[in-house]
Image (cartoon, rainbow, N blue to C red; front, side, top):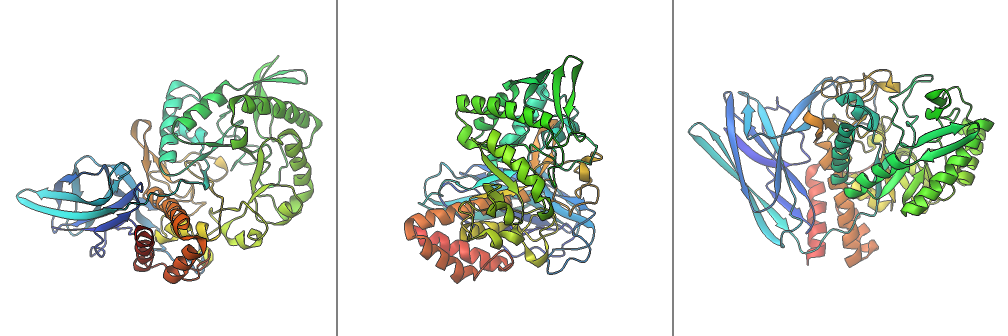
Length: 535
């Protein structure tokens, strides 16, 4: 039996013929969480009992492999991957039960996540003992906790939360007791890993839905229609906000008021009418129709009054349409004018990659994809960016399962250098095929039915009994957010110019297409950052 601690930047395959290089030391700011993996190999099949001893809080997961039918789109250029062919990849962090099964000649891994938030500065140990019959092996890792705490997270991070997918996967009624229990559990998981701005379905979000198709209704605003007059009940919206705030989520990103890719139609909106509860707007509704504009005007007044009374208006963001193209500006211009007029109390954000939308004043917070961020860098004071299925060539950072973890972890340093105010990704828990034509089992299908590279559509798995199970990409991304907070803490002590110099001296002149991918260089950066604030 052989075992060693390795870093959280390693993705350890079960068929690896050797263990990665050992990393047995974590250097953490005072309130920083950290992760290590314990990798194990055995000559013959073994069931190992595992005991760990530490004075630090420690959560242990078993790293499990999932199948990636589409690791990357064919023909990808300048796109570093661990493996490019379909196969099994380490990704799922399954709750550990105390026994680790290791197949003979294969490698298994445990993921240890420690949270020394309340620990005094100093050096700590994590000792893990493996027992296989009479054979015993103990491995020890060091955790160095510094004096300096991380800065508070000021970056707004949203990873689109698909409440309908939770109801569908667990087969529970929307807004029933089980729905709320499961939704709260997934909110808590999202907040644990840095999400502080949540997609909030005023109406069923018109995202990734085939024209003429529907997703399961998740509408927080209860609408009653009498003639051309509408009344609104915000009870469910208030409950949603209360649960989110309970777990530290501070900002609310209202779902899009017009359909995706051009704002041609209204989203699906259900209402109580004289003919019963039915859809009153949808694909058949032109976005600029007089009836829908009248509805938006009345909704805007009522929603603003509700948010003002609740004290959340300055923490709410509103969307027009997702990713409009340059040829759709005339229609988007008119829809955006309605958003500004009726929902002017809220900040308007949209994912888009053409600066003309911002130049014309159509959107206050443009969110360009990583490859277009340079077009906006010197124009937008509160710069956001995002990645999704399209950001993979030219080494753009992303979270695909087949990518080395450094391509996700590097985001912290990049978000700091580019002085970003927000980050968006579209799939926290999207358990559908593309355009939501069918539902999937994410434990078996990681590519949305072969449409998106594995890992793009979700970062969390729907575990047993409504419990979210992390992917290993979730803590890696959170580590990137912690890197950003560490850099902000260093800036308070050293100044921004000194911190930018430290980044340049250790990582080079990085941008979203150029950065080092070797683990040694990255951890040299982290080590020097740690020492710079601990002197």
